[in-house]
Length: 491
Image (cartoon, rainbow, N blue to C red; front, top):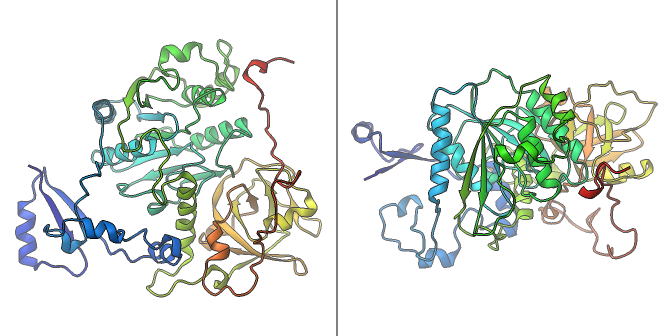
């Protein structure tokens, strides 16, 4: 039998003597759950929005239907309703977890590099959280390479990142936002408009990881597994020293080919083309040679697998909004108190001659660039080249591949004084390195503009008197280098 011990740290319920007696009863098969107060800048900021008020408290109907005579009710723990199955893992899932853990614990040459792939809504994020938590029982940390732009785990959407996870993941992405060791702002929730930039960004991130580092690495991938999406997976397995490919599926239908070593020998990639593999040779000669890997097939049996979540705040766009709100909550004071609307916070003043401004996701006329950037989210990036101004704003003609250190909101532009007014939680010592502001497709949640306290009168930059059905009303999207698979290589 497994015992669960709940220790409330803070105002301790137990005396010192009682705690010592309790600790003596803890065995290797016991589980200790640490309960922290729910009060934090994150919970205060999200709860200040009416439509998010129920995030951190169960619905009244759920409370009324729960059995409230269990010993843990006093700690806020209530039983699941009989209609809720909870987390369910398949046999193949447990076997895959065991195989990866055994590889990491055994006499392994270098670090285990685990690439997780599968179609949308198959449970990749759930599997990765379980895998990370399992590995943390055997290692002090786990490295993580983010390759899913639309469903990022530790950053706002639109980011490719490399980071280190040191604590278990016990909630959805917005509850564990982490500052990555290295990050590149792609600026879109999908990579389909510029596949080369996507691959080059991931390769650039991987090069920044020390080759002698022995911690396991988990690579998250997008749910795009057909056509060019499959070719991207082929390239990633070839470019990176993958030791395990965990391929998730559900049902009896084959969603995409098994990415076994045998399949990879003849598969067509986007940048790699067997047998020549020019791009592959160019990368591996300067970094690391490819090697054989273990293919693990997992039949997913997680709740709601194969379909988009229908519950409140479970859709992908809502997850992206919550992650961004979670990041912006860092602007709030860590001390208890009322939430301060973002427009009441003191911004940084940034000379427009000191930073370059660029748009990643679409083409914007230089004369309209500042209109597009005002009241928008921007990536705070570091160009290697020195910014040279001719007495006015510096506008980039194309999206650079450069490090990103965080995000900010341009809450105003003073053309007369040549200043951007920027809100950001990034530390000032790091901000000194920033010389580029990149505007992407990831926009501020509408509640930031419409639902914060203290807004009176007409809200700027918010209108309903606009029709996207008009010709030319939407943004111009450019698909760089993207053509039908049958036309690749045809001049």
